[in-house]
Image (tube, rainbow, N blue to C red; front, side):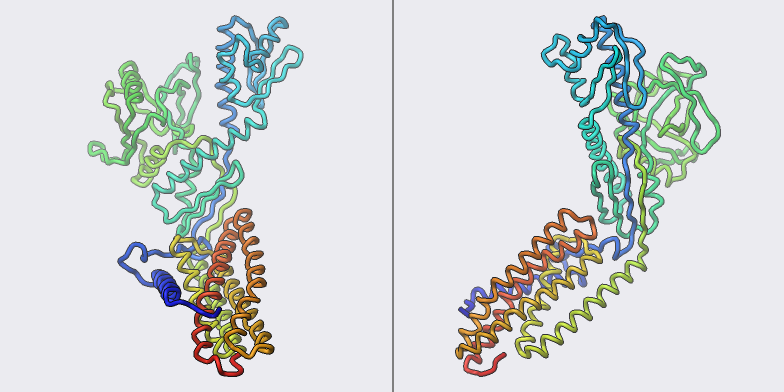
Length: 517
């Protein structure tokens, strides 16, 4: 029946008032934390940078297979099984063995119950493919192993990228996975992406190694260049310390030399190793290597047992700050390559906002005018409900501090059209009922009841489409589907509660009047 209790009227009024105030918080500042929320503007509205990063897993696969090569050598040596010509080529380990050992070697990899089992789980965890051809064994990652490795690298890289961006202090970054080897980074409000690109493009693999003049070092040696210089030095491959032993790193000003340095603090294990290395290496140069380039190579003058030190290298304060940030956030598991980038300037973003608002105002005004001419007083009721509907929609987005994009504005405009469509269906159904029913109250009640199925069917099918778009679509599509989905619920509320309440109040006072609609 066309009846609203006082409790329901109060409830509808309070809900509407609450969302009107909440929407107003986007324009005015309130002292209350709950009310003082705002909708965030997306990259296309406030400008910013868009970066799509791809993880290069090849070095990771190579490194893990190198580690596995050592593991294989040690294991078979313990078992007195001779293997020959072990080498790593094209991400595949190969080695040969005598005919009599073939089955024993296969058992190491394939027979869980074998007596050679102790290392089996370590082999098995790599998800390997083991093939034997003419007494030559080939060990490589299986498809499942590659997928697991890529997933692991992506999870680690995502966390480190997030740390680096958070350290910079970028407002509301959006960092998402794309597939199993890509990361999407959206940085609203950032119109100069060069510093971020520099930070994300560095693996930040830090090592401390001795400079050696002997190219036949027992650990092996390699020739590395100094950063920002053509000079080179032969550096031992033996790693004294790595970035994993760092607890903290901060830019500092060295008062003695009046230059900017990076001060670092080591954990307990790192401090012990560093103390031992500096005590036995007095007079030697200790190379500080970052991503394959020597930052500096100071001469060790005394034992450093405090677990802290300084890195110098002709830094500006900005470069020292960035290096400290990279060291604190940790090394990436694999290099990141920028395969796509876009920058939207704030002026273009403002143009998008203006264009979207103009489209919304024009469309909204035309709809209001049409409904008002077509249905007169009930058109006015529809327009009031429509305005409140917009307040509720924006209010809900404000509660969750959602990010509004240009497609999101399109979703709001579509919501306006759907809200009007529901009211048109109801009023046209009421007209049909008034032809056969003289009692206005019964005719209006029947109009709302009998049009409900058609309205629900239309909105539910649209909601299903919005849900599919949200889970299957990319960023801009998600923004459109989110506002559309929320708009469906607010539309149904405004139609069956706000518009119906106002209709009840008017019809109840004019129940004897003919030609109401």
